[in-house]
Image 1: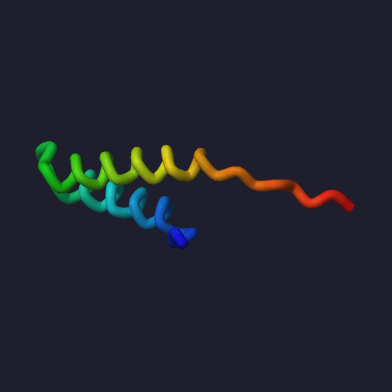
Image 2: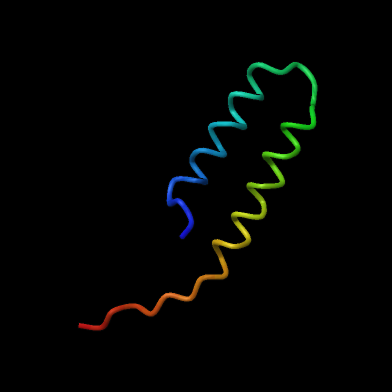
Amino acid sequence: MMDKHIIDNLLTMVKVLYDLVPMPCEEMNNVIETLKRVYGLNGNRFEIPSIY
């Protein structure tokens, strides 16, 4: 099961890299690509709403 806080963690990594690294770097690219994949996988879930 995917960690429910992974998107928040990845966004925090992007903020830290943006603040500390003056130029675009491979690490920033890797975090952004991972974030895009997580968003894509997150949208592929099918949840059946409960009916009361």
